[in-house]
Amino acid sequence: MENQSDKILATLKQITRALDIQSKNLTRKYGLTGPQLLVLKELYKNSSLSLKQVAENVSLSQATVTSIMDRLEKMQFVMRVRNIHDKRKVNIKLAEKATDILSMNPGLLQEQFSEQFEKLEQWEKNYLLSALQRIALMMNAENIKHVSVMDIEALEAADILDGQG
Image 1 (cartoon, rainbow, N blue to C red):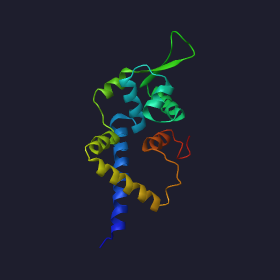
Image 2: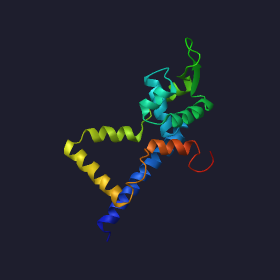
Image 3: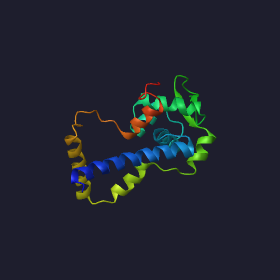
Image 4: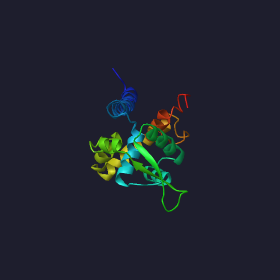
């Protein structure tokens, strides 16, 4: 019979697996990673943003967004366009290929999570956060620099983590 610590670790593995499956489904269905879709959705909401603005709006580093943008441009989802008033500035525009995909409204797991999380009572939100922070502490993860799931997916997409970049 499993003890409670085994059940917690199994649940953490389920969460990790759900993130992985969602990412693979996005890639298989749309040819996009989670971070790429996040960036495209931001550009869809706010057309003609600079890289810096996109990075700030999606809470990723500018270097990560630049890498994502390079890939999106190579895949012909976006175009870089010089500002007609200031040639030093470059804005990003969505290509028709991207708007076609975005019109299907593909979802991100983090959006589903946030929607469900916001329905919880405040005490439940605090309890979950506290429990997860305690688990991180118990796994000696408190000294590991915070990296969001989106950052990890972006790095994997850029082949940085697996040594191919």
